[in-house]
Image (cartoon, rainbow, N blue to C red; front, side):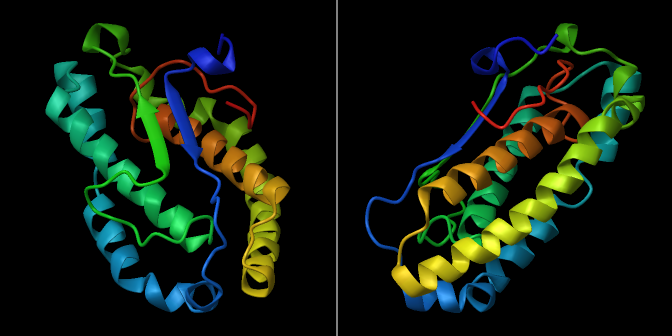
Length: 191
């Protein structure tokens, strides 16, 4: 059972901007983000496969590897928040800024050795839901971007929806890719 939303071991949120967003940088966001986006993609490549082998053959998820994955994941979350015009701060490589990602560390005794081999299969219903949500988020993100360019404000309802989709996707990724939990992710967007 997934339990209540607040006790799930992965929490994700982004602070709603209290001041008007920069319309000019939002207009050119996809050009401005290229350097940090390429850095994030380059560093993130090939982190899951070695972890599957570590869990399968050694039944270990070393704390240093967990910390590395978590900080990398946080960095990618800041990139995503900036790319989607949710925040104006350029993604920092070391400061958490207004993007919050908390993941409880699971000792190897809490993680099943063989489950990483089939988690992708168990998560197929989540992938189907995420496909629909990502299409809706693409539309909502384009509308939000347009609203920021015109009014310098991201509509709160669209902002909350985008964060909810990000939270849901983060929990599915924690289960299937980062492998930090064996608890099946809940089918919800709220915390």
